[in-house]
Structures are given as structure tokens and as C-alpha cells.
Image (cartoon, rainbow, N blue to C red):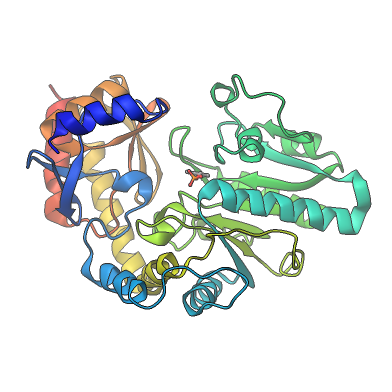
Amino acid sequence: MNFNEIKNLDEEYGAKTFARYPVAFAGGKNATLVDTAGKEYIDFGAGIAVNVFGANDEEWKNAVKAQLDKIQHVSNYYYSEPQAELARLLCEKSGAKRAFFANSGAEANECAFKTARKYSFEKYGETRKRIVSLKNSFHGRTLFTLTATGQDEFHRYFAPFVPEMTSVPADIKAVERAADSKACAVVIECVQGESGVTALDSSFVRELAAYCKENDVLLICDEVQSGIGRTGKFFAYEHYGIVPDLVTSAKGLGGGLPIGACLFYSKTENVLTAGDHGSTFGGNPVVCAGACNVVGRLNEEFLFEVAGKAEYLRAKLRLIDGVKAVTGLGMMIGLELDKPPKEVARACLDKGLLVLTAHKRLRIVPPLTITKTEMDEGLAILRGVLEK
Ligand SMILES: *Cc1c(COP(=O)(O)O)cnc(C)c1O
């Protein structure tokens, strides 16, 4: 099919949930994608921080194909080597004790929220059901995670929401007032992604961790976007010197295949037991084989390189006229511009560069394996668009 045939088909039969850019991709290598007409693009979006090794990474593909040729799906009634191996790898990298596998970030958060409510129910009965989240957060599109999402624009039409949830500014006094001995958990994104790529203030995060510890309120780090090497650490919370009670992961974890994970640390490792939670597809062996390749390759040396590339990109971005601020952490980059970000993203697309937007900012989250040549090509296009 050529592009117009694909577009017409999608517009006739696909749900109208996405305002799509006028392009369809047919292939690519690392951070260089090719569309159906053969035009090349530098990829500063990685499928929304998903494709950590870019397109067509041979080692990752071989890991997936090898598992695909063995067994494709098994029910969670049975044991599975790739799933058990992935749980081990994640725990060894993070200090978590156990892992539950789902299929998306929203589902990973559902699992964390349910775990928090059960933890509290068993210890305190019916009195502490509240989950406190932050303003400008994003935790997913299911009703539980949408309720936690602290951005009103996502809430239109869908009331009534899940009770005993509230979102407050990133201020310790505000959290304390909202928790008010009725909370079982506080959920944060150390770097808020969808609302504009904003790293939380480190003294707030440390105060919050201390408050949670003192009051036996579980601290949940939603690392769906910020995790898996994105900020130059395996998880972004490591920059803050804290240890959470629950961590959720998704986007980059599968290297391009759908997976979510909820990681349980020492306080929460035994909360969920047989029958409390589950998933038909969660922990699928083919997906887990890909994720094992991702997690296995994110060693110190790889992360050090990511941090170096992030420094390079950030330094170059600061020099571009029209860039008012460079936000975020590592390779999770927000740009404050003097032009509307959607218009800039569209102009970049025409010139062969894929960038994302996040609320009022431009968002740059390239494959972690992006080369210096690819970064320079992308920077040149962005400079051309912004300095015009
Ligand atoms: C993308 C995202 C989610 C939702 O993930 P899905 O896989 O789309 O359900 C949740 N939390 C954060 C921080 C995200 O960036």
C-alpha cells in the first residue's frame, strides 16, 4: 500500500482517537527511519521513549526470534523461563525483590495501586485507602490511573472516578495535608513526562521519601517513561538517592514490544498472593525474551554512554536560538520554545526529523543507541526550523 491508501483505510475504519501526522513508516535502522515513500527521518522520539535500541537492532531481534521459534504464548498457570529470567534481571538491577508483569504502563500502575490498597487494608483496615498523586502527573488511561493523573484535560467526560484519590502540587506540606493519615500511597514520576518533561525538585523528593517512611505510606515511583536507562541511570529515582516501595516500568522495557512491570521492594514483596491480581498476556515469553535482552545490555558502560550523549545533546540544544530552556534529565529532554511546539514538530517532520511534544514543550527522547552522526543531523534540522 502507498501512503494515501494506508491513510484512507485508517480514516475509514480506525477509531478517531489519534490526531496523526501524515506519515507511515516502512523500515529503518537505529535512529534513522524510512517512510513508505522512501524518505528518511532522524528519530528523536523512539516511539514515545520505547525503542531503546532504535529500529532493527540485530541482537534484540535475534533474542525475540529465538524465543518465537520455541514457544509463543503460555498461560500464567505455568512457569516460563523468559519471564522468570526477566524478573531476576530486573530485581538484580534495581534492588527490588519481586516483579509482576502486565502489558502496558497503565496496567503496571494498576498493579501498584491495588498493592498499596491491599497493604494498607491488611495493616490498618478500612481507614487508609487514599492514593495521593501530583499535579501535572500522567499515570495512564484506565480509570484508576486516569484518576491519579493530575491534569484536568484528561478528565473531561469520564466521571465518576475512583474514590479516595487526590492530586496536589509538588510541595511536602500539600502532600501531608492531602495524606492526612488516610493515605496508603503517594505516586510520583521523578521526571514528569507527558506534562512537559520536568524533573522534580530533589529536596522535595527526599522530604517526601522521609515522610512516607515515617508514616508507613508507600512511595510509588512511576518509571514508565523515565526508567530503563532513559535518564542515564537504570531508574530515574536513583538520581534522588531514595528507595521506593513500588516501581512501575513499561515503555522502554520491551525494546518495542508491549510489556509493563510492577516491582515490589522489601515492604511490598509479599502483599499480593494467588488470586489477587493477574493478566492473560502479562509476561508473554516472546516479549520477555526481548525485555531480557534490553535489561541485560543496560550495564554501567551503556548507561555511562547514554549520560554522555545526553550531555552532548543538551549542550548543543542550549546554543540554538529560540530555545528558552532545556529541561528534564539525561535523554529525557524538554525544550521551552518561543514558538508553539506542535507547529515546530510538524515543520521538523517535513524536514525529516521526528520530535514529540509534551504539553507546552517540545520533547526529545531518542533511542539510547543514537549515534553522534544521527544527533548532529537531527540538531541541524531542528536548528533550521527554530532559527528560521
Ligand atoms: C506512558 C505513561 C504511562 C502509560 O503507559 P501506557 O503503556 O500507555 O499505558 C504511565 N505513566 C507514565 C509516566 C507514562 O509516561
